[in-house]
Image (cartoon, rainbow, N blue to C red; front, side, top):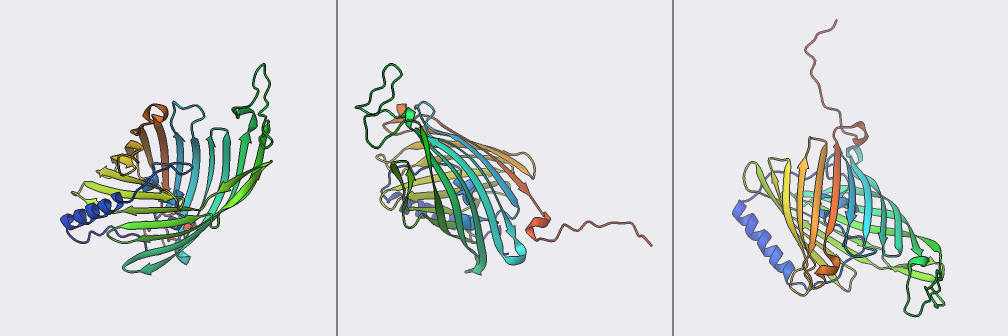
Length: 335
């Protein structure tokens, strides 16, 4: 399997000019809205949104995410994510799976997904074609719903609505994704399409529509010095009607200290949050990251404060990858 080469091509000045030009073009696209299950760690774990990325970390990679969003807002969104992916070098494949649980107001989500990707050499880099299939369970806590015409006094829960019921009820459905990821010595980029065509999940008398989503990612790493590396990235999400964009600027110092900023939105009407990220690579296997998103829109007081924590674990040269184990030279001679 051909993976991303870290060889630097071109001058630093030319690469920086190209990156600034790309960000300027992105900033001319009008954007708004937040997609479901928001995460600010896409540049650190592209696999969560792009199945074709599986295996590109060149290890058995495990990611654990925990996000609590808009902590001052009752019923605020939160989720937990656990995912693993790895390369199968023998067959030029990348495989993985993940589990997610999330809550958003009266809605609860649980999903399990599995993915596979095939890697090809193309245009001086590696092109991966991937697909993902998942099982999704959604639930609604009818007792937590409040309607304008409902009766909720003296312990009574009556929504006075022919569709909304009390109690908890669930519905099951499937999710699917087609994904493309390309890694070049200069940059890496990916695009994924989810749930085409859009389809509903039945929850008692309620239908919850899973809309088609389009997600894009672009990263252009720049070496500022031998020990300092700059990793600007752009993340774009869309439901084919509205677009949400993020611009990330991450610094990696001495290979084990991380820090950066992120802005969600690209103009004053669409700015949503300003994020601050710190991280530390504890050793070759374990890395931990923390992100805080501060609200900067007119709704700042209502949705101020989002916290996200991620633990990344990498296992290298394990037999499961199909890669030969590291050779250990023994000075002893046995007869």
